Length: 357
Image (cartoon, rainbow, N blue to C red; front, side, top):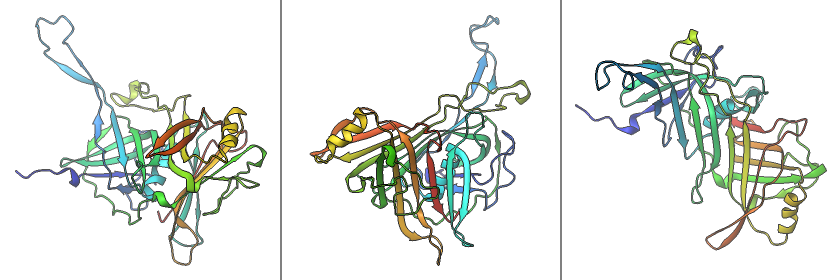
């Protein structure tokens, strides 16, 4: 009997074809609606089911004699240490739920904009195909519970991504062929740019321009050369303990987000003694702060076009938490961090992804 190696496993998400109704599954696994994720570190789907046995009841025996599956549950902890633009875009679409796409002329190049759904709007759900240890399963009703986009460690040259996905519990054996892998290069940390703006100079552009800041009517603080680490996190607070309705049997009939959704950003930068007092004032004075974090790869997606592979993350408003100090290899660092807040006009965050998908 041959061995089954971990590197033979495969994973596919129907990110371009959300379910019309929860747990209904996608319309079809087409090249235009699915992406095959690859070069990931961890991605085993866990069947976190609830079982009931007669172990703790009186039934004429000291030992259990029977059990059954009461509720089915599928969860996936996904880690990609060298994230690609389309992979990031697919998961950001699930993280926010609102998607608007602009094409680069008539070329096969796109700018996707992602923003969070309103409080009373459901997050989108998709299907997932997993092939592991020689078995292949289709799982439906997949939603994103958490996401973190960050530099993949102080020595890593790329951006990394972690995502927590929860499904309805549905899983079925399947033999659908996996779509072809995309050819995009991973996003490099060295291509990152970062700006910070405060107060009345905050001005969010309706459409971003790659390579330039898009959050200021004046001159923002340029953090690019000082930036040593960054992390954007999404917490959608999915109500995974609910949704097991009678009509759905052992699987969820719905999977709602909670009212405790949270979005955060953290920027770790080298200390600049000439600006530290001003930056600490952003915290002390409770200033409104806007942040833009961009990766512009410099590589045009389609010949004769203008879009370049990358992403742009814009936080229109946050209030800084106490500024933390740290040291890395003798270099003094500070961390600017805060929770995204509503400014009365803009979404809590705007995520843009540039890709051929």
